[in-house]
Structures are given as C-alpha cells and as structure tokens.
Length: 376
Ligand code: SAH
Ligand code: SF4
Image 1 (tube, rainbow, N blue to C red):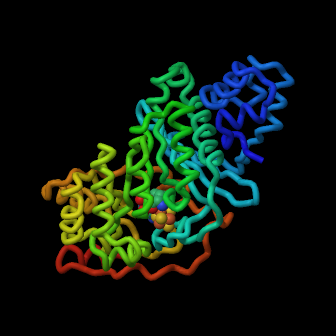
Image 2 (cartoon, rainbow, N blue to C red):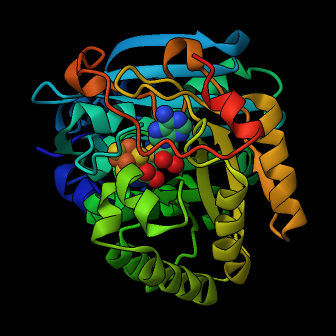
C-alpha cells in the first residue's frame, strides 16, 4: 500500500476513484501546500477526509523529537514500516530553514568516521518516506516560526526552505526514489532546484545520471581527501570510483547543470588538515571552480580521532583562499543531540557499540602539526 506521499497525482486520483478533479486538487494542495493531515482538510466533506486517511496512511511514526541550539536545531527520530528508524534534522537560520533528510536507513558505504556508516545498511527509503520527512519538518518549522514565517505564503515561503540530502544514507545508492522525491518536492511543494542539494560520497554513475536530468539541483561531493591513498582509507568506495574519474564526472555535471559544485571536507585532526592536504584539495577544486565546505569532524563513538581545533580550521580555510579556492567553515549544529553531520545513527535503535576503529593513517608533519597530533 502506498503511504501518504508515495502517490503522485494520477495515483491519488485512482485511489480516490469517483472523486471529481477539483476534489483531488484540494487533497493535493492540502498535503503539499498546507502540510495538512486529512482531518485538518476542512474544505473537504468529512467522509472524504476519512477516505484519504484510510487510503494514504502516513509512513513515519514519530518516536522522538529533540531540540538543541536554543530551538534552532530539531532532530526527529521516525520509525518506518518494518521497524527501521531514520532521522531528519531541521535547522533554522536567519530568514530560512534547512531540512536535512535521510535517503536510506543506515548506509552500506562504510566510511569509518560516520556514525551512519558504522551502523551498516538497513534498507532503502521510498519516495514517500523521503518527501514526508520534508513535509513533517516544514510543518514543524511553520509552527516554530509562527508570525514571522507562517504568515508568508506561496513562493516566498518556498524560497525560505532548503532541502539537503545529507542525512542518513547515500542518495545515489537509492537513485530512483531519491530523484522521484526531488521531482515531487519541486513540482508539488514548489521548492526550486537551487534550494535542493544532493550530497554523494562520489558514486560516479549517479552523478552522470543526475547530469542527464532536466532539473539542475545542487551537487555536493563528500571528498575529505584529495589523494587516492588517503581517500581509499577514509571513504572505501574511492577504490571503485577514484579521484580522476570522479573529477571528470563533476566537471561534466557543472558544465551541463550550470550549478556550482560543493566539496565537503570534514577536518580530521592529524589526518587531512595539513598543508599538503590543503594543496591537494586546491588542485582538485580549482579546475572545477568548486566551493569547499569545511567542517571539523564531529565525534562519533566508533572513530578515535577528533575534529581539527577551531584555530587550525580557520588557518586551513585561509590557506585554501590563498591557493585560489573559496572555502566556508560550516557552523556545526546539534552536536549535543547527535544531530550533527555524520552523527545520525538511528538505524540500530541505539548508538553503535562497535569497537573504536583505528583511524586512517595519521601522518604527522614536522613542527606545528606534531604538537596538535599528540594531544589526547
Ligand atoms: N552519503 C552522503 C550523504 C550523507 S552524509 C555523503 O556521504 O555525502 C552527509 C555529510 O556528512 C557528508 O559530507 C559526510 O561525509 C559527512 N560526515 C560523515 N561523518 C561525519 C562526521 N563524523 N563529522 C562531520 N561530517 C561527517
Ligand atoms: Fe554513507 Fe555518507 Fe556516511 Fe559515507 S559519509 S557512510 S556515504 S552516509
């Protein structure tokens, strides 16, 4: 049975067979524009509200909701049919809100520094399960921003909402459902392509498929290392999709989409934050005119090494600037509720109890770096 946001307009008409087109449209608007539950669709006859509720049950059962950063970060834990759990993070910034959605319960890519990767793969999410995360978070945001935000209707409100596929899972490993969700968020909710971002660990066939789509969404590639030796260790899928072909796919994506590429780089103390790392990153990023997002590694239980200290993060960003690359230091959100990048680990129902992994080669540099690396 399809869940509430799995059905497209045709499927909705088929499910509510016999209803006139204007009624179908009212239901659709209620779901996607007003983020309403069927019982709240007071413009519908009561019997039809009940029919919608029965035909399109919600996919996500709220298990927990936690807030951090004085209400500016909210993490939702959802249970899916079959028992898997996923998380969604809502972050408010001045004038806009960002929903970080999961595309899979768990992840099979095995990046050692990522809590989702440490927990392993559970299952793919359906289109409706992805779209519903956005709708439920957006509804929450409208409530939180009552007055300032909820009064804003139509395109302005849509412009205030960004969706990033940076929660649990690898979107390109669940391409069809992910892309159908993107199209629904664009077509039905009205979120423009420039407010939609897909983040990938670097699955080249996925990037190539994305380039062939009509809708030019933003692409973020989680790079973390710009030489194959180190990247093989940090991001094991690099053995299959190494940096050379990855750069070529990125170049083609930028050329066809006209979008700016972002490279994500989690700064790991003593591992990928040295001068040589900045130089390699600059060599990779410059020809692609990519923007680099730096974030100190967030702590996860299964990985012993820590994030780079703030001063050295700024120095790394400055170094990149000197090398001709635009870099932003990303604000870390929700670390205390495990809602920060790479900390989502709901799949096992609990924090992974995996033994602490040996970090990737911890190469030290003479001088400044030795001191930093020896901190405990
Ligand atoms: N699978 C996709 C999208 C989800 S992960 C991808 O990897 O791109 C979202 C981002 O968080 C990625 O850039 C990922 O590399 C990063 N990340 C994972 N673990 C992290 C950690 N412990 N600290 C900071 N960022 C992390
Ligand atoms: Fe999967 Fe992305 Fe985590 Fe790697 S960083 S394990 S690809 S979710």
